[in-house]
Amino acid sequence: MPVSDDVVVNAYRFLFGREPENQDVIALNSKAQDWQDLRNAFIHSDEFKNGIAQTLSLGGKAPIGQHMNERDNDVEVHCSPEQLQMMFDGIARNWKQFGDTEPHWSVLTNPVFFKDKLPQYLDAFFAHGQIDVEHALSYLARAGLPATGFDRAMDFGCGVGRLTVALAPHTRSIVGVDISPSHLREAEKTMAAKSIRNAKFQQIRMVDDIDGLGTFDFIFSRIVLQHNPPPIMAAIYRKLLGVLRPGGVAVIQIPTYLKGRPFSVDAYLSGDAPDMEMNALPQHEIFRIIQEQGCITLEVRECTDLRDIHGISHTFVVQKVEAMKEKKRGWFQRSRNS
Image 1 (tube, helix red, strand yellow):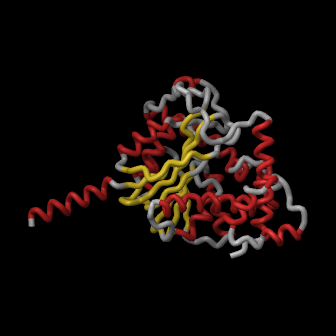
Image 2 (cartoon, helix red, strand yellow):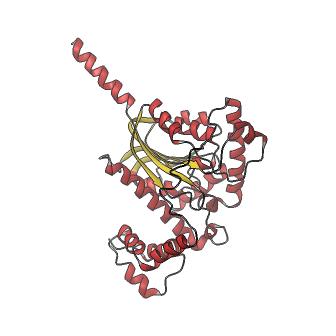
């Protein structure tokens, strides 16, 4: 199905950083079979390749495969419940302020999403979310799992509903979860404006609130956990995997290494954290959580979300299996006793 003119215009803005030359080139590119076909045409164009080459010639680095020989990764992950809540409260205050002032920009920190420019670029904002969701669903399809028709899904760190909008058609119901009430109000307005009726939103005030959200067969979170201190990242990830249903899948992006950025709980709580902080959770901690929560890893993909920050980011695709094994053991035991 040919893409719309709006999708073509947004592709020019995001991939080339400019407007299309004229209506003729928009009409020509709108004949692409779908958005994937359009994207492939753009990224294989001379203009895109020359832009990448110029970046590298000016001292830029390829976004994938960096920091292979780094050995220092001094990140403290464990703390007391009281310290965890102090960190959580600080993050909540910062993000409420972002929601009160620049909610869309705080989700995608591009100047075009400031309030004064937002009306012109709002379609691009949500088109970007559609691409993210399509990538997430592709992980499931590659693993031989259903990539649509979920019973209950969660968009964790939903912000203003950028991913919720794109996920809603694929699930019977979806819950958008965030710590910022101001972001959630914007998300509810978005759902009403787009006539999306299967989404609801929930604010959490502590990590343990995740336990009260119920269970889910699909959980998606992207460019969210990175804005929390590592102990909160670990605690949230553990809780999210804990509310997966047997056979359910979580697709969650997490930075796993930031060069020259150690983390100490005491230093963090005694200092002034930046308004929008960036942190990493080491991979060995992530794999430990996956195992303890009865999940298996289906795919790990290094991604480019950190942009010009020197570090590594990964998307982890994991499936809950422990309860499935228990069910099979129970069936085997009953069969032996019958």
